[in-house]
Image 1 (cartoon, helix red, strand yellow):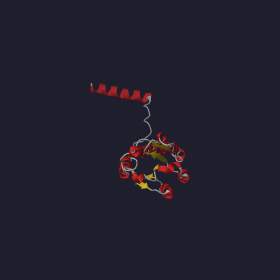
Image 2 (tube, helix red, strand yellow):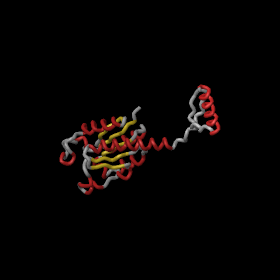
Image 3 (tube, helix red, strand yellow):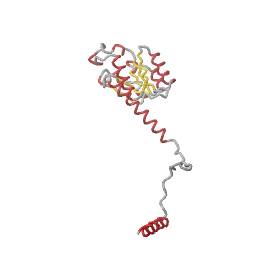
Image 4 (cartoon, helix red, strand yellow):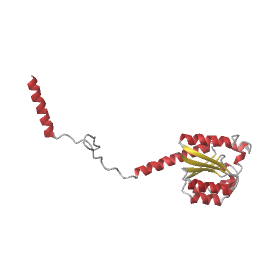
Length: 197
């Protein structure tokens, strides 16, 4: 069963495509969803795509992702990024890795947008890549998942050597032929050659 990634969008992101296109571009939220599903598909990740203008619903979605053991969360909390302690606390309370995304470069805009309550409790933050930032975030999550699985495999104890039954190949390395056995084999071949002669 494919692991899921929750992509959560905050207030006013339902207006993408018409809201300040000089800042956010012409792509719609449907375009963002299609991009996320394509990125998830590359990594065999199912995408749960949500948008809400209500703080509590975003908190509930974070809790749901944790309860369902999602592989990760990609969140663009919109203006709640700069104001919501509740969303910050929800992220800090769960074990699901979270990547924060912003379409615009928030640090090139108004000073109140420079503060993120989410960044300190997120695994990573991306901004300024347009909607491509969502796909980059999913790629990053997939890399984190892969690294975590590799670490878990390396921590597993080594298996004991296989003891093969009769007729089976053993995984033990072949032992070198003893020198005396080698000389005896050479003498046998010499005698056989003389007999042929």
